[in-house]
Amino acid sequence: MTVTTVEETLNPYQIAQQQIDTAAAHLQLPEHVTQILKQPKRVLSVNFPVRMDDGSVRVFEGYRSQHNDAIGPTKGGIRFHPDVTLDEVKALSMWMSFKCGVVGLPYGGGKGGVICDPHLLSKGELERVSRAFMEAIADFVGPDKDIPAPDVYTTPQIMGWMMDTYSRLKGVNSPGVITGKPLILGGSKGRNEATAQGCVYTILEALKDLDIPVQDATVAVQGFGNAGRIAARLLSEAGCKVVAVSDSKCGIYDPNGIDIEKISTLKDTSSIREYGESFVISNEALLELNVDILVPAALENVITAANADRIKAKIIAEAANGPTTPEADRVLFGKGITVIPDVLANAGGVTVSYFEWVQNLANYYWSEAEVLEKLETNMVLSYVAVRDLAKEHDVDLRTAAYMISIKRIAAAMDARGWI
Image 1 (cartoon, rainbow, N blue to C red):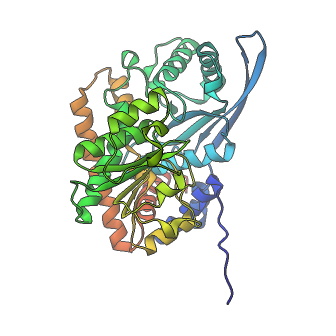
Image 2: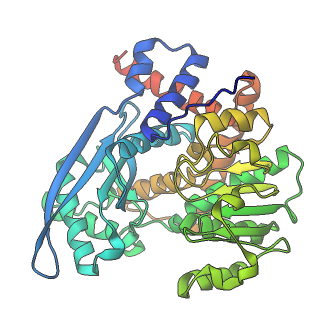
């Protein structure tokens, strides 16, 4: 008997290109259109000096990728992380294009990153890095050109510093250059919860489709950062039973349900491990629990060909970007598992970022209730459109989401005369 070993790439840029190929094939797009979509329109690489607290000067490296601006200005976060790579930033900018497209926003995709560990920087050093990076990319961004936002290890305060730097350089107050800002600087109400809230709206729709009662539907959340923590709380408040959560150190599993408030306090003050050693499991084991809903809310490539066959969840809602590889997607689709793809599941963040940008341009601000009402309407309509197209073509939700986005981008490129 011959055993075939599946070769799969974990390079996010190559994964994004594979996903485009799959969707484009269903749309029967001309090859040159597919080739345009498979690479960013422009990418900036910068090196910039920052004076550290001890008086030394350190040179940091950063990137900004703009995938496609046929529909409108590019949009996407800036992450500060020691493992940032150019391929990762390029892939994330591409995913942002499809994320904006699937929820109907007038944006293309952008993404940025600085190679650094913000945990090792003082507040002053972090501010100087933030301002220096914005100075390095200032001619590349703008409210009608490319609009950054927070991402991994960046915060509203960092966005405030960047907005201030851009405004000083341009000589005008320009809150619309960046989103995810503090409220006092033009941030939007509801932005902090938006990614998780949008994810929860899609989960509730998927539960209806599968006739799974919300009450006591079991949930495992991998990643207890902003999106994962808020998603766990919101799902618990909706009536679900959160039985497992994890951070980068370990997971906690209690089949009787986890006390979300208690574990949030432990996360902030010490370690979730202190919930009790008898509850501790590995991150890998959490992914394979027999639950109704699995929410990967950490980093890329956690569900791969190596473990996809052991996944038992009925619904996977990707609060993180790129947690599932293409080969794993094929396995999960074959098992009948509903995967709500990242470009849809976590599009609540960019949707409310769009709302923030609109409010900045109009200088008129909405209540939190208005923001959440608009977010729910947009997320539910987008989920239904993706679900219906997936049924029509007998494809998974990710492919259907890409088909909707790619068709939209291609139409804009055609209208501009690019293709």
